[in-house]
Length: 305
Image 1 (tube, rainbow, N blue to C red):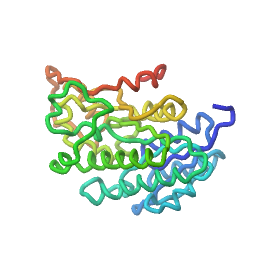
Image 2: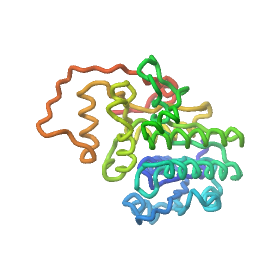
Image 3: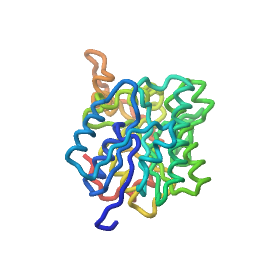
Image 4: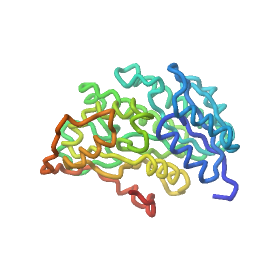
């Protein structure tokens, strides 16, 4: 990259992941268009933080968008060479039926189409989820689950895994349109996100992810977590690297022991909690099926504690 960093857009910058990507981009000298979705419940704490940052950061521009309003997206993208797309349930009501799923899919289609109509758009970095890849019948019989894997839509509907269904259909719709419009896109399929104040700032997505039968994911060897700072770094490197392509599974650790499961629960407290007087036995070890070989080269040199 040149010393004069280009303008990029983060949509939705008010999501937990979007906010950390926004901070990472600003720290690297990019001019950032923070596209914030309208929220019927009012401004969140993250939105308030972004507006405070705007007062002291001249390289931060803030836009209010509605992903169902194509023209508002176009305005936010003007002059940007990349989009970091972090779609989520904007109203905070969770993923509980086909309607919520459909809204997110329609939003993704609008966002990608707006990118196709934006002059100078070089890359879309699409934030997705491992739940878009790990839900199928008999997944426990598979030795490896990697970026070629997709969750089965019928299976998700059968078990009412609305979050997994939303992430699967949204990512597939984005890929289909991006390829049709010949856009350069990569997706980052993240495990459950942990990090500072995650329970406060990301309760809906966290609980929606866990509602997708966390115990079964654990038993199937496909429950994994990722630190939000590491995840944001991966998104930015995916943009800056000329060689990135396709999907990237992104996680720091597969949760395959009771001890690790307990640590994950505690990191997400008070959203979820252990029963009183719970004692970890620490004997059980589950298989690890997830593979993220593609990510290794991209993240070489990134420190993670």
